[in-house]
Structure formats: structure tokens, C-alpha cells
Image 1 (cartoon, helix red, strand yellow):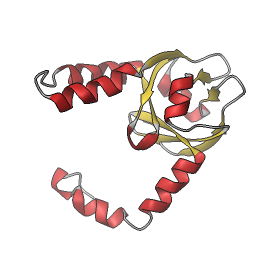
Image 2 (cartoon, rainbow, N blue to C red):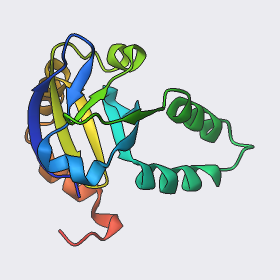
Image 3 (cartoon, rainbow, N blue to C red):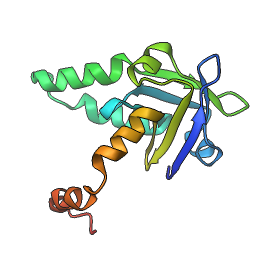
Image 4 (cartoon, rainbow, N blue to C red):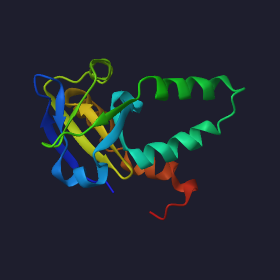
Length: 145
């Protein structure tokens, strides 16, 4: 399980040091793809395969399902973590997430998210004080808060 928020930086080659607490759960290979809200999603291989199987069951006849699947898979890259715990972030994904030198890496249970620092801070500021409202909206999902 991935938990927490960490501040890191991309090196000159576009590599990111994965927080040490995430490395074991991530493994030597992972998949990086466009995420929602302007971040990147990073999945361990087993979580990616599980998600891929679920997405494969979306109805091909629905335009929204095709669009979402295209968005998700077309930008996905299988990445190998080096011995120093770094992963290379492809240029196109760096541009999508507006990553510069400083990034925020957050744990999201089954996946990791990578955010440009400015975008993350804007996201947090825009959602400050709305936790209670969000909790009310997800009440029908019966998660026991």
C-alpha cells in the first residue's frame, strides 16, 4: 500500500527517485501513464494488469469507454527502476503533467501519483475545506467513514 506525500526532483535526464518507502511495493518494473486531474499514475505491474483486465470489459460500443481507454493506454509506458531507485519519466508525460525540476509524489493505496509542485499546490488550495463535502458525496459507497 502506498501512503504519504514526498517532495523530490527530476534530474537533468528526466529521472525521478522513487521514495524509498514505495520501492518495494513498486518492484523493478512499473507502468507510468497519464492520470486524472493533470498528474501521472504509476502502477506496479500486477496492479496495472488487474486494471487492464477491468478496462478490457468496458463496452466497445460506448464512445466514452473507448475514449477513456485510449487516453489511458496510449500514453502508458512500461518503465524499469534502476539500482538507485530512479525511473525515467518520458518527455510526453512530463509535458502532460507540467513537471519541472520539483515534483510531489503521493501514495494512493494501489498506485502512486506524480504531480508538478505548482499544480499540486493549486489542487490542494482549490480543495481546502472541501473534505467534509467530499465525504458526504461518497457516503453512498459505504466505506464506513
